[in-house]
Amino acid sequence: MSRLAEAERVKLAIDHLGHRGDGVATTSEGPVYVPLTLAGELVEVERVGDRARLVSVVEPSAERIEPICRHVGQCGGCALQHWSREPYEAWKRTLVTQALARVGLTPDVAPLVTAHGEGRRRATFHARSPGGSARRGEDLLAVGFAGRRSHAVVAIDACPILAPSMAGALSAAWAVAQVLAPLAKPLDIQVTATETGLDLDVRGSGPLKPARVAALAEAAGTLGLARLTRHGELVLQREPPLVTMGRARVTLPPGSFLQATARGEAVLSALVQEAVTGRRRIADLFAGVGTFALRLAGEARVAAYESAVPAVEALLRAVRGTSGLKPVTAEARDLFRRPLLPMELKGFDAVVFDPPRQGAEAQARQFAASAVPLVVGVSCDPASFARDAAILTEGGYRLEHVTPVDQFLYSPHVELVGVFRR
Image (cartoon, rainbow, N blue to C red):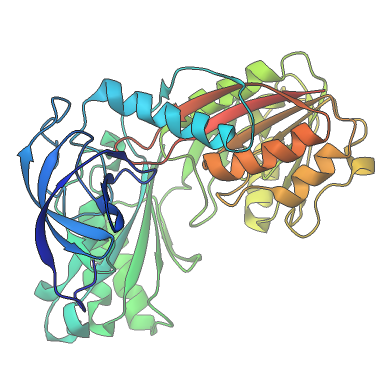
């Protein structure tokens, strides 16, 4: 909320929740968005325009519960810890049905599948120094997550949604940030829990002198990290950071994408595998390091396409090191600029696509012009999925069913798997 205008303290009645998880109050001047509130509540807020900061809950909802983290309200990572599970899960499913309804689609939508499992196995911590004053001492460092609608960093000492395998992640991020504190640069520290230990990639430091790199390597050794990289460049590796996907073991490229939870990856993969059962030649688009391709290759020939060259290389290394797989090819290709054309899609009896949040509009148009009998879409954004789904249905596909998946517990993010058939 901007402080350029003077805040007005008022009481508001919350009507419903918006798609970002904020409570929405309808006023004569339009909607006002209030984080950490629930439908049916009367709240006191400090309001500026259409945004407000919660001061107190005057009349709480019966669905309100006590958050599990003391940083709620400051940290921007969780929006809905204060909501009981049943209505929370119903709301997340509604995010999917409403997005599809807006483009005229009403497929069978399954109940939400909870996929938080043991918790998040990857996180990006931010390290900042107030006023750029890190030169005055490491005590001024703040290491944690971005604040709610703010670039300020909320320093944290624990995060209850992280998996047990992330134990030590925060202390490792603090140690690395302290080594780099004299540079007074904002840092982003991505930590991934792998089967061989924690994998850290640091970004934002800029070029480092050899002595600083040596200090980082010493810290990584002391912390027992599997690997430490800086902007993807190796600082120290004790063990290759490995994850298992199907029969294969994959060495992750520095800073690479991985599904947020192990349970989420397992659920999404099972839904995809079930949808393509019996198919013999499958294309996996936006394949990453092989989350789906390496599992699908147990039963079918797979052609994988991914824009990130290190991910493609990691996938191919995993294929070469795994016996019993059907043939797998992998190509580095920007599917936003060079989507697979109908002639290239000819011969596949199923296609799986799992694009980033912006969706795959260009590729969806090529699907619509193709003769592929089965398309399985995986998405982390119901709105972009709905747009792409409308393109496919206009091209002759039927959206048979959709399964929402919740691996981002307490957040407004929901993933899904949708099955299209001709």
